[in-house]
Length: 187
Ligand SMILES: CC(C)(COP(=O)(O)OP(=O)(O)OC[C@H]1O[C@@H](n2cnc3c(N)ncnc32)[C@H](O)[C@@H]1OP(=O)(O)O)[C@@H](O)C(=O)NCCC(=O)NCCS
Image (cartoon, rainbow, N blue to C red; front, top):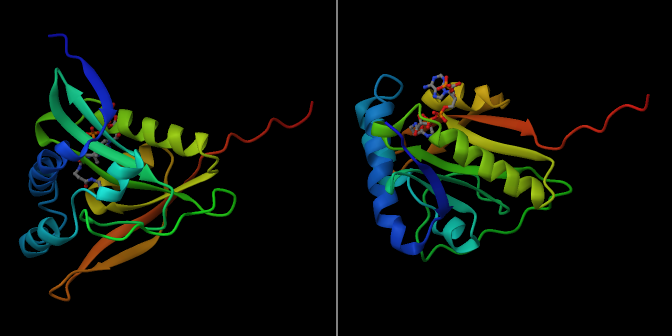
C-alpha cells in the first residue's frame, strides 16, 4: 500500500485535533513508564499544544494520506516544556549565539508510530532552528521517548522534574544535541 507522508505548519484550527491526538498518544504509549495517576494528570495539565509555537510558525503537523498523524516543533523562546493556552504571555526570546533552541511537543498518533512521522518532524524542527542560527538543540523528553531522541544524536544531561498541580512530579529527561556542522580540519 502506498502512503503519502506530508507536512505543513500547524494552524489555530488544528489545535483541538492535536490536543486530542496528544491524549491518545500519551495514554497509549506511556503506560508502563508512568503511573495511571501521573498520566491522567499530565494529559490534563502538562501535555498538549503550546499556542505560542503556532503563532510563531514553529509548529508542524504531519499527515498520512491527509489524516493527522503527528505534531511537533521547535522554539526560539525560553519556554522549555508544557502546554500553554492562547492567553499565555509570550516567553522571552533565546539568543542563538548563546542559547540552545528548544525542541517542543512531539506527539505521534499511536496508529502511526514507527512510520517516520517523528523523524520528519524532528528534521523539520532541527533544520529550521539551524537556519535561525542555533548551534545546539535542547529538549525535555518523556521517558519512553528517550530512545527516539537518542537515535538522532541527543544525549541525556539530567533528570528534569515538572511539577503538576497535585504536587506530583512528572519525570522527564533533559537532552541536548549540537546542531552546527563542525568545520573540517585543514588538510
Ligand atoms: C517518540 C515519538 C514521537 C516517536 O515518533 P515515531 O513517529 O514513532 O518515530 P519514527 O517512526 O520517526 O522513528 C524514527 C527512529 O527513532 C527510533 N525510535 C522511535 N521510537 C522508538 C522507540 N519507542 N524505541 C526505540 N527507538 C525508537 C528508531 O530508531 C526509529 O527508526 P526505525 O523505526 O527505523 O527503527 C512517538 O513514539 C510518540 O508520540 N510518543 C508518545 C508521546 C511522547 O512521549 N512524545 C515525546 C514528547 S518529549
